[in-house]
Image 1: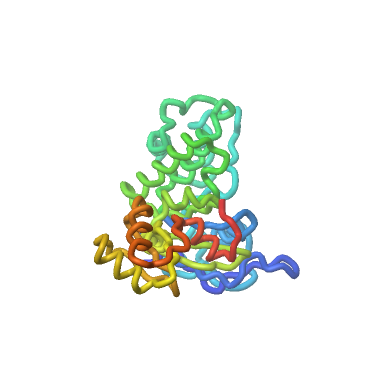
Image 2 (image 1 turned 90 degrees about the horizontal axis):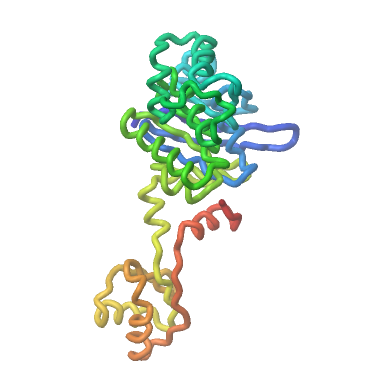
Length: 305
């Protein structure tokens, strides 16, 4: 399996405070990796270490199979990034901002400026001064600048922060298109659980500087399936009745007196009637198992987004 980025024991301390603790991150080629955690969890510090903006206290970063130590300049040619808010010359146009960046970075292919502006939907506004851009347009321009050198990996720190719902939807679709059409791998940090769920193919959950879990989207979906939680006085008899009387087999006994029934979320009344009419005491039936419950469990009860 090809890994675009791996961190091994990555740690950052400021004085006596550990901000990132022994982080093992694994990002595969083609991933849209949602780096999820509340504000202050260590997301930006981790991304800044990956980009070489700050030095780790300990640990190692591997990019495209090679350690970054001693090879950072070559590795950085394959990465685009927006770390925190993208800054521009506000009195210049989008095209002029990208031209300045192209020259500073020693990039060729001036023609690619119009191509990346087209990719992010700003071609028609290329000659407009950036000070007249909306926040969403500035975010798009930041992405265009990050794309200017054909990166294989994009590192984006809270890229939808401050956008309205329409802007978030547009940026999300842009990322999906870039991943599918151009094969770009993404690391996208966010404190918004709902945003990560709709975008990521793989999720890493960071809490107080520690990576609590890495999980594929399909596994996440299985763990966060909604279900009816049924609390009864006889779980074995209740399970028998679900199958024999109602024809429901997508359930599991989650614990003594507790059943989780999947795929029949609108049948709580008929389930209750079938169980009680056959002598099973029903203590409670409730809808449960959403993704917020799962992330609260992983982070020890601290809400995310």
